Length: 598
Image (cartoon, rainbow, N blue to C red; front, side, top):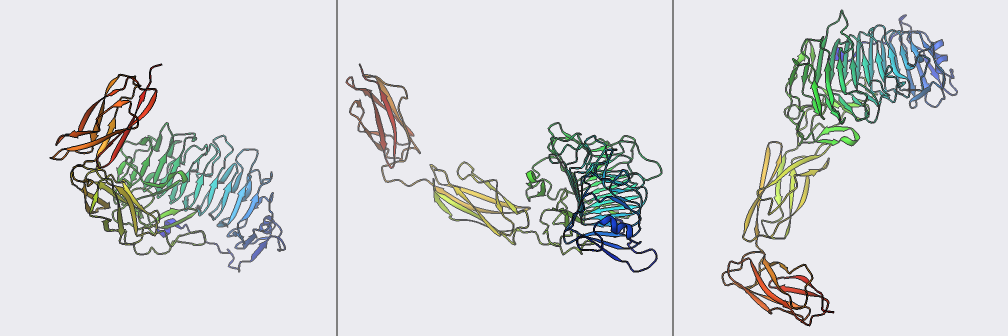
């Protein structure tokens, strides 16, 4: 794994002489980086102070084994209308070049492909750098290996579809992109590589509101390992394809393999996506395992692809998709949905890291069966690998996933109409992203419950307020809390509201809603919340005016749930609004509109 993920880009002077450190910036021996490049010998270290202004300082880099890095912050180089050799800001022709902690912007050339870094030849490592608002972020490569890590690319592209955030030529033997973010390409692609071998590992590749085309374009095939990435396209994308392979023709003389494992693909494009677009000339089955495919569209155009463990339907349980946070909750359909992805030759396909924004990664440990997608639920995001780290630390022992420890209710018996509280307790604090404990009710018409109780990261307990409906007879309700395969139950008895002897709870009293006139006869209907008891019940009636004839009380026989009372408006009734009340253990009311004679 280490051999493949960390290309050997030795930075040592070819002559074996001690490397010189050449300092650039205000008050330093060199005012501008290009002055230091011109004076450098093979194997030197060039440190560029972020305090300096280096706009327009463009040039070739011809020496070998150079380490070029920003210090005291990230050094910024804006092309400011200048370019070297008609190609870009820095044109790298030396071998084994390492560039760290530099920001590149504004590269423009007559050919419309001005690059922040133009790689003409040699091995190149780019670490902790930012490329934005160039015609191309990084372009080129005629031989060797390229490693880009912990770096960010956004808003690059001329706008003609021929320039991209990252574009590597066919001369590159091996390209590794990891722990990086490529976003919002301008009509072009987020990542385009014609390299013979490509490792696209644990990155955030999101078009967001950009107008880019493909998220990953491998137009000439090769051996491609696309593992653990977040890959997103939105409504403004130029093309439905997200990952393409061989669409410009398979190159000769190289092995063609495609492994697409444990990625999270998200398309919000209303016309749908083609998640994995494979050229018909590539007949070997692509391995497509343990991916999340969120959004409508075609999973893959290859009919014989080896598909397993992928999730394309159900609630994905993304934590904050509006902010492109596609970590999953414990209620996600992707939870435990994956399969053992296997290996390809000596390269394990099982993800060992997961992207952590911004520009970092954390060790990924299986918490139970492997989850589909770029994120494993329950991973504690500690021991992050960021730009200062040269390689991942040894993974910590897998943390114990929090389990459901207790589920309790605030009361064992309540009266209808009363409130109660349900509380869940975990065996350990909820990890980053929180935990959702699912809830169900055996009688949701009596005690409705939310679909889940959420425990915030770091919490062990959480509660939900519930309300019991009024019932006619005592009803036992069983509530269930579930987390993973574990479930706990708690019961509560809901009793009818107690009333005084000879009384009953009233539900409504109704009268005609139309306007009545003097002399009109009408009915008043009284409905009970539950049938009248065995001895029946008497209900008291009252009016706010004497202009309606109505008895002072009415009897409801045992078992009846309503009673109708005849009434009549007096012939001398004036225009008025009368209020009618019915009383037993409680009081209900209505009003009557009367329009008197003129």
